[in-house]
Length: 124
Image 1: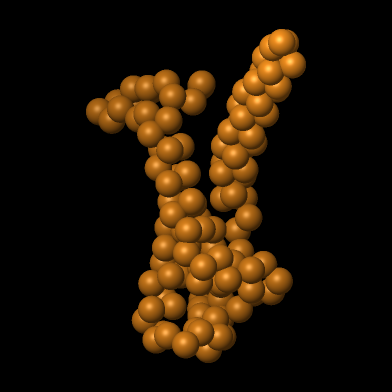
Image 2 (image 1 turned 135 degrees about the vertical axis):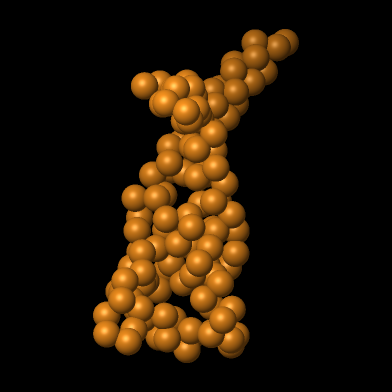
């Protein structure tokens, strides 16, 4: 099914474009914060427990947990229980939609700049 088309599934109507944009908003919103970007950088290298992540910042455990909840809603991290600890893993697949979006924007702007350059070269 083409993104953006509405599919009728029984009593529920589902719009794929709405979900796509909502997911992009969650990813970009998550990445807008320096602490969350730093958390992603750390766990991209290795899985860490929530406690290990929290010990790296001058903020409360609860504040770090809130940052992790934002990243989890955006599907950028996955938490799993290991004994008494929660282990946090980076989930890079969530970035694929954002990457495609940025590539489309880059293509649009490169095309516009190419047209502008051509126009300017044609001017006397």
